Image 1 (tube, rainbow, N blue to C red):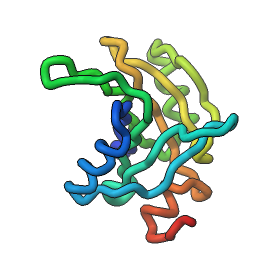
Image 2 (cartoon, helix red, strand yellow):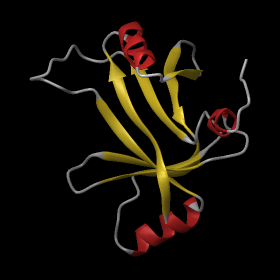
Image 3 (tube, rainbow, N blue to C red):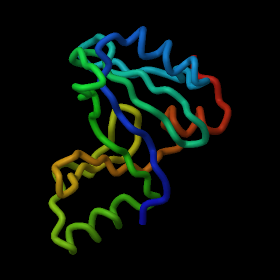
Image 4 (cartoon, rainbow, N blue to C red):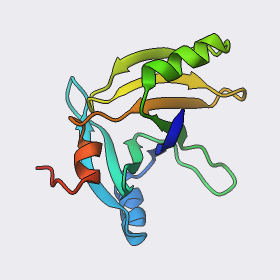
Length: 139
């Protein structure tokens, strides 16, 4: 069973401008993840509780008439293996996973009927999201 929205993910054309925009809304960076080979992979913005926005660098230049930075919707569950089994039994294709992400959370990937990617995520007590949501300051 899905318990909440974990995050929405977007690719930013101008990362600094995007982070400044969300800061105006009171949504500030909480932590970032780097690629295993080095370099920034993404910045997590903390909305509240266990809810975040992921912002990836390297997006295309967009406009109101040409949006296009959506990457995926993350839905949280407290039983990822059970959710994956239920979906498989219903004939849903599991595109990837279950696996453990760089943030230590369990994840699996599916897509909706319009081919929009959906991440299914079970939060780990070792993850930065869990710690930030519970008031731990990361260094």
